[in-house]
Image (cartoon, rainbow, N blue to C red):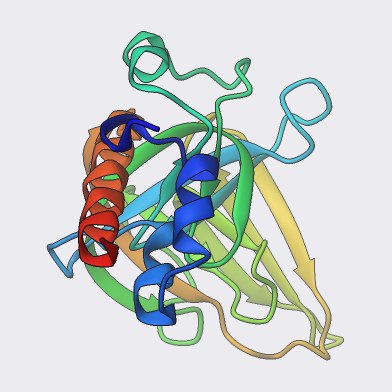
Amino acid sequence: MNSSNLTLVEALLFVMTMPSSLGAQWCGPPLPNPDQSYLLVRRAGGPATSSENWYDLTRSASCMDCGHAELLRYKPSPKNYGFDVVSERTVRYGVYQAWRVRIVSTSDSQKAPVSTRDAVYVLLYPRNPDWIFAATKYKVASTEAGAKKITYTDFQDGHEHTIAVSPEWPRPWQIYEVEVLASNVFLEIWQAQQHALRDCLTEKH
Protein backbone atom coordinates (compact mmCIF):
# COMPACT_ATOMS: atom_id res chain seq x y z
CA MET A 1 0.00 0.00 0.00
CA ASN A 2 1.36 3.40 -0.97
CA SER A 3 1.14 5.59 2.15
CA SER A 4 1.60 8.76 0.06
CA ASN A 5 -1.83 8.32 -1.54
CA LEU A 6 -4.10 6.69 1.04
CA THR A 7 -7.88 6.83 1.00
CA LEU A 8 -9.57 7.30 4.34
CA VAL A 9 -10.91 3.74 4.32
CA GLU A 10 -7.44 2.30 3.67
CA ALA A 11 -5.90 4.46 6.35
CA LEU A 12 -8.50 3.41 8.90
CA LEU A 13 -7.05 -0.11 8.76
CA PHE A 14 -3.89 1.41 10.20
CA VAL A 15 -5.58 3.90 12.49
CA MET A 16 -7.73 1.25 14.19
CA THR A 17 -4.55 -0.35 15.57
CA MET A 18 -3.07 2.94 16.82
CA PRO A 19 -3.26 4.33 20.34
CA SER A 20 -6.42 6.38 20.92
CA SER A 21 -4.44 9.63 21.00
CA LEU A 22 -3.35 8.97 17.41
CA GLY A 23 -6.46 7.21 16.17
CA ALA A 24 -8.55 10.32 16.79
CA GLN A 25 -6.78 11.98 13.87
CA TRP A 26 -8.72 9.88 11.37
CA CYS A 27 -11.38 12.64 11.29
CA GLY A 28 -8.77 15.08 10.01
CA PRO A 29 -6.35 17.53 11.58
CA PRO A 30 -7.82 20.81 12.84
CA LEU A 31 -7.04 23.93 10.89
CA PRO A 32 -3.88 25.57 12.27
CA ASN A 33 -5.60 28.94 12.68
CA PRO A 34 -8.09 28.72 15.60
CA ASP A 35 -10.30 31.38 13.98
CA GLN A 36 -10.85 29.27 10.87
CA SER A 37 -13.25 26.41 10.16
CA TYR A 38 -14.69 24.50 7.25
CA LEU A 39 -18.26 25.22 6.17
CA LEU A 40 -19.82 22.21 4.41
CA VAL A 41 -23.10 22.03 2.51
CA ARG A 42 -25.13 19.07 1.29
CA ARG A 43 -28.64 18.20 0.13
CA ALA A 44 -30.52 16.14 2.70
CA GLY A 45 -31.20 12.80 1.04
CA GLY A 46 -29.07 13.72 -1.97
CA PRO A 47 -29.57 16.09 -4.94
CA ALA A 48 -32.31 13.98 -6.50
CA THR A 49 -34.63 14.03 -3.47
CA SER A 50 -34.11 17.39 -1.77
CA SER A 51 -33.78 21.05 -2.70
CA GLU A 52 -32.90 22.22 0.80
CA ASN A 53 -29.33 22.86 1.89
CA TRP A 54 -27.98 21.50 5.16
CA TYR A 55 -24.67 22.66 6.55
CA ASP A 56 -21.92 21.83 9.01
CA LEU A 57 -19.28 24.06 10.60
CA THR A 58 -16.25 22.06 11.67
CA ARG A 59 -12.64 22.69 12.64
CA SER A 60 -11.52 19.40 11.07
CA ALA A 61 -12.66 17.29 8.12
CA SER A 62 -11.66 14.30 6.02
CA CYS A 63 -12.90 13.22 2.58
CA MET A 64 -13.84 9.56 2.33
CA ASP A 65 -12.88 7.45 -0.70
CA CYS A 66 -11.70 10.27 -2.93
CA GLY A 67 -8.48 10.69 -4.85
CA HIS A 68 -6.25 13.52 -6.02
CA ALA A 69 -7.27 13.37 -9.70
CA GLU A 70 -10.99 13.27 -8.86
CA LEU A 71 -10.67 16.29 -6.58
CA LEU A 72 -8.79 18.26 -9.23
CA ARG A 73 -11.62 17.69 -11.73
CA TYR A 74 -14.49 18.36 -9.34
CA LYS A 75 -16.76 21.37 -9.96
CA PRO A 76 -19.09 22.17 -7.03
CA SER A 77 -22.79 22.11 -7.88
CA PRO A 78 -25.95 21.22 -5.94
CA LYS A 79 -26.69 18.84 -8.82
CA ASN A 80 -23.60 16.80 -7.93
CA TYR A 81 -23.47 14.24 -5.14
CA GLY A 82 -20.05 15.53 -4.10
CA PHE A 83 -18.16 13.65 -1.38
CA ASP A 84 -18.78 11.97 1.94
CA VAL A 85 -16.97 14.05 4.55
CA VAL A 86 -16.18 13.22 8.17
CA SER A 87 -16.68 16.28 10.36
CA GLU A 88 -16.22 16.77 14.09
CA ARG A 89 -19.83 15.67 14.64
CA THR A 90 -20.53 12.84 12.19
CA VAL A 91 -20.22 11.74 8.57
CA ARG A 92 -21.89 14.22 6.21
CA TYR A 93 -22.95 12.38 3.07
CA GLY A 94 -23.05 14.09 -0.33
CA VAL A 95 -21.23 17.32 0.54
CA TYR A 96 -21.19 19.22 -2.76
CA GLN A 97 -19.34 22.36 -1.64
CA ALA A 98 -16.81 23.14 1.09
CA TRP A 99 -15.49 26.54 2.10
CA ARG A 100 -12.73 27.61 4.45
CA VAL A 101 -14.10 30.44 6.58
CA ARG A 102 -12.95 32.79 9.30
CA ILE A 103 -15.11 33.27 12.38
CA VAL A 104 -15.73 37.01 12.57
CA SER A 105 -17.96 37.02 15.66
CA THR A 106 -20.13 34.76 17.80
CA SER A 107 -23.46 35.42 19.46
CA ASP A 108 -26.80 33.73 20.07
CA SER A 109 -30.44 34.29 19.20
CA GLN A 110 -31.21 35.95 22.54
CA LYS A 111 -28.51 38.59 22.17
CA ALA A 112 -28.95 39.01 18.39
CA PRO A 113 -32.43 37.80 17.32
CA VAL A 114 -32.24 39.64 13.99
CA SER A 115 -29.35 40.11 11.60
CA THR A 116 -28.44 43.76 11.25
CA ARG A 117 -26.85 43.54 7.81
CA ASP A 118 -26.35 41.13 4.94
CA ALA A 119 -23.39 38.88 5.72
CA VAL A 120 -22.75 35.14 6.05
CA TYR A 121 -24.17 33.69 9.26
CA VAL A 122 -24.11 30.13 10.51
CA LEU A 123 -27.06 29.23 12.74
CA LEU A 124 -26.54 26.17 14.95
CA TYR A 125 -29.00 24.61 17.38
CA PRO A 126 -27.04 22.70 20.07
CA ARG A 127 -29.83 20.22 20.80
CA ASN A 128 -30.04 18.96 17.21
CA PRO A 129 -26.69 18.33 15.44
CA ASP A 130 -28.40 18.43 12.03
CA TRP A 131 -29.86 21.89 12.54
CA ILE A 132 -26.98 23.90 11.13
CA PHE A 133 -27.83 26.46 8.46
CA ALA A 134 -25.96 29.20 6.66
CA ALA A 135 -27.77 32.40 5.82
CA THR A 136 -27.27 35.89 4.48
CA LYS A 137 -29.91 37.20 6.90
CA TYR A 138 -32.13 35.76 9.62
CA LYS A 139 -34.81 36.55 12.18
CA VAL A 140 -35.73 34.65 15.33
CA ALA A 141 -39.21 35.47 16.70
CA SER A 142 -41.31 34.09 19.56
CA THR A 143 -44.93 33.02 19.12
CA GLU A 144 -47.73 33.53 21.66
CA ALA A 145 -47.47 29.86 22.59
CA GLY A 146 -43.79 30.26 23.46
CA ALA A 147 -42.42 28.52 20.39
CA LYS A 148 -39.65 29.99 18.25
CA LYS A 149 -39.90 30.77 14.54
CA ILE A 150 -36.63 31.11 12.65
CA THR A 151 -36.76 32.68 9.20
CA TYR A 152 -33.56 32.80 7.18
CA THR A 153 -32.33 33.38 3.63
CA ASP A 154 -30.14 30.50 2.52
CA PHE A 155 -26.52 31.40 1.80
CA GLN A 156 -26.26 29.14 -1.25
CA ASP A 157 -29.53 29.47 -3.17
CA GLY A 158 -31.01 32.70 -1.78
CA HIS A 159 -34.33 31.06 -0.91
CA GLU A 160 -36.19 31.91 2.28
CA HIS A 161 -36.88 29.11 4.75
CA THR A 162 -38.72 28.90 8.06
CA ILE A 163 -38.11 26.57 11.01
CA ALA A 164 -40.54 26.16 13.89
CA VAL A 165 -39.04 25.16 17.24
CA SER A 166 -41.19 23.72 20.03
CA PRO A 167 -41.53 25.64 23.33
CA GLU A 168 -40.03 22.51 24.90
CA TRP A 169 -36.76 23.41 23.16
CA PRO A 170 -36.09 26.89 24.62
CA ARG A 171 -32.33 26.86 24.22
CA PRO A 172 -31.06 29.78 22.08
CA TRP A 173 -29.44 29.22 18.71
CA GLN A 174 -25.71 29.78 18.42
CA ILE A 175 -24.89 32.32 15.71
CA TYR A 176 -21.54 32.73 13.97
CA GLU A 177 -20.77 35.46 11.50
CA VAL A 178 -18.15 34.14 9.07
CA GLU A 179 -16.01 35.45 6.25
CA VAL A 180 -15.49 33.11 3.30
CA LEU A 181 -11.77 32.77 2.56
CA ALA A 182 -11.79 30.01 -0.08
CA SER A 183 -14.29 27.75 -1.84
CA ASN A 184 -14.09 24.18 -3.20
CA VAL A 185 -11.45 23.30 -0.58
CA PHE A 186 -11.90 19.52 -0.90
CA LEU A 187 -8.35 19.21 -2.24
CA GLU A 188 -7.03 21.24 0.69
CA ILE A 189 -8.90 18.96 3.12
CA TRP A 190 -7.57 15.85 1.40
CA GLN A 191 -3.98 17.11 1.41
CA ALA A 192 -4.12 17.91 5.14
CA GLN A 193 -5.64 14.48 5.71
CA GLN A 194 -2.80 12.79 3.79
CA HIS A 195 -0.15 14.66 5.78
CA ALA A 196 -1.80 13.72 9.08
CA LEU A 197 -2.11 10.07 8.11
CA ARG A 198 1.52 9.89 7.01
CA ASP A 199 2.53 11.42 10.35
CA CYS A 200 0.47 8.78 12.15
CA LEU A 201 2.07 5.98 10.16
CA THR A 202 5.53 7.39 10.78
CA GLU A 203 4.92 7.51 14.53
CA LYS A 204 3.47 3.99 14.51
CA HIS A 205 6.42 2.49 12.64
